[in-house]
Image 1 (spheres, rainbow, N blue to C red):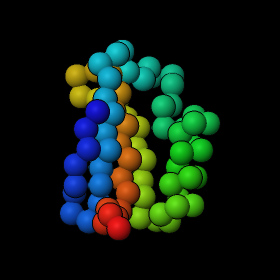
Image 2 (image 1 turned 180 degrees about the horizontal axis):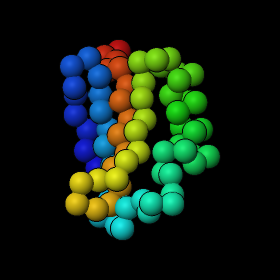
Image 3 (image 1 turned 120 degrees about the vertical axis):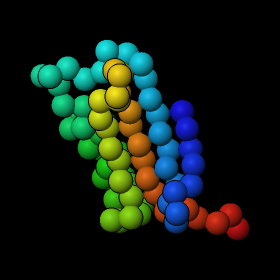
Length: 72
């Protein structure tokens, strides 16, 4: 798990070292991923993004990018 600021955005990354997505699976299109994208879009509009991909060397990496908001 990693979080860092990338310009005006916050990037939240989760990686695993499992077998990763198979050739038959589509990790970027499941119900949970779709619901998360919808929620991000509702809250942040086009400024938010969720990607889910095979990680280099095996496993899966998911990255959420949202605008940074200053604490009140």
